[in-house]
Image (cartoon, rainbow, N blue to C red; front, side):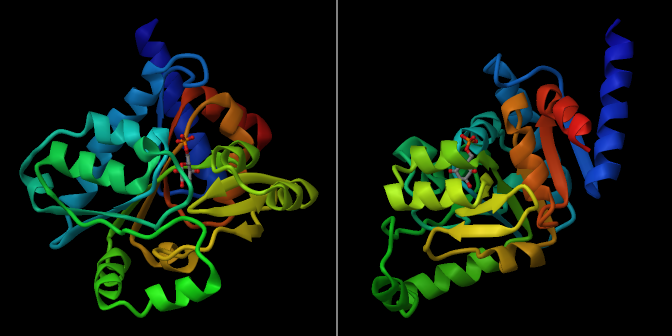
Length: 257
Ligand code: BG6
């Protein structure tokens, strides 16, 4: 029974890797929509994967996004020799999350558990164009932005568009735009339609999608049957090359493709 289940998941991983055009796919058993421990298992699998990828890097810099899934990665982090040399940074500035779901918080937690290092990015949410421009001129901000852009590993979540917009208490106007333009996915503060086109973006400093594309290893961690459409849409951007997901999302994704 157990052996055939494992074989089945390896099969699902290979099929997904092929149809999404990714370098690596890891599928953990279960569905995180139904059982909370499944998110922790995705976290555990991501930690192992991070250690494997970082082993090859001379300078180890990891950029992280916020969200409950990346928070689960932080929770499962354990120290080792690779991790002690790792610098953790948030991928982007304020995106309107609660403290425990913010990239800064997760970054500090993960670095502490890894016994590594961290630097934070303190920028308010919902920047105006003016404050955005002046922040970009701050030497301290410039310095950390350079570090963030030199990350060789990015670990990020993917959200369902409406869920994320509501969680961020976005304005009626934004909710309306997302609805009209049929947003299905969100990642890095960008919203996408089913074809993977960008239809809206939150203004904040840090990694822009064009920077993420240039990063060597980009790991998306997202699971649950309810996220299948969002994962499928975002993967059309070809920004991430690695996916850690669960059986629920994986099986739904295979049905979509
Ligand atoms: C947010 C990120 O913090 O978490 C988003 O800014 C991401 O880009 C989201 O989509 C995912 O959240 P969760 O809780 O579903 O892992």
